Image (cartoon, rainbow, N blue to C red; front, side):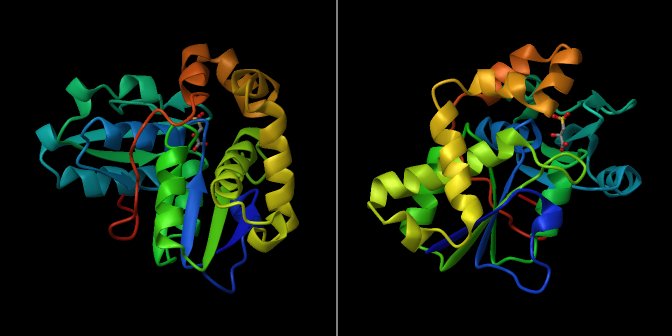
Length: 241
Ligand code: 3SL
C-alpha cells in the first residue's frame, strides 16, 4: 500500500485516480456523515449545488429524507439541518437519507468520486477506516483534506496523519515504504504533536476559530474524539455513501 496525502482538493492530481480515496473534513462534513450512518441513516447523498440538492431530494418521500445545508459555517435557510453532527440524533435520522451540501467537504468527496473505492473519514471513525485499509490493502490510497476554499486546514491534515500514524503503528512498516509523498510524513508529525489535545489544535485552526465565533464549541469537542464510531462511510454510487 502506498499512501498519499493531499491537503486540499485543489492539490489533488487530476490526471489519475487511486484505487482508494479518502475524503476528510473533520470540521465538520465527514464527521457529520459518519455520525448519520452510525446512528442508522439510510445513506448520505452529497451535492455541491444547493438547487440540485433541492431538485433531487424533492423526488424522495418526505418522511424518508433530511436536507442539510451549510454555507460559511451557518445553516442554509429553509433546510432542516445545518452541518452539526450533534443534531444528527438517532431519533431524527434513523432510516432517512441525508441530502447534504457543505462549503468544502462535499467538494472534496466529489473531487475523488471516480476512485474505485471512496471513503469518508474523520477522527471519530479513524479506526474503522484504518481497519478497512489493513484488510483490503489497496495499492494506492489518497487522503484528501477538504481545506477551506482552497487553503490548508490543520484539522484535516492532522486527521490524515492520524490514519497514517495508525497504519505505521499496526504494521511496523517503515515510513518510507508507506509514504508516497512528503505530505504523509508531515501529517504524521502534526498529528503526533497534537494527538493528546486535538481540541486545543482546533482552537488554533482558522476554521475552528470560525466555528467558535458561531458558538459551536460543543461541535468542536465532538469532532475531536478519536475512534468513537465503528462506521465506514463508503461510496455506493457517485455521490452516495
Ligand atoms: O466546509 C465544509 O464542508 C463544512 O464542513 C464547514 S462547517 O464546519 O460546516 O462550517
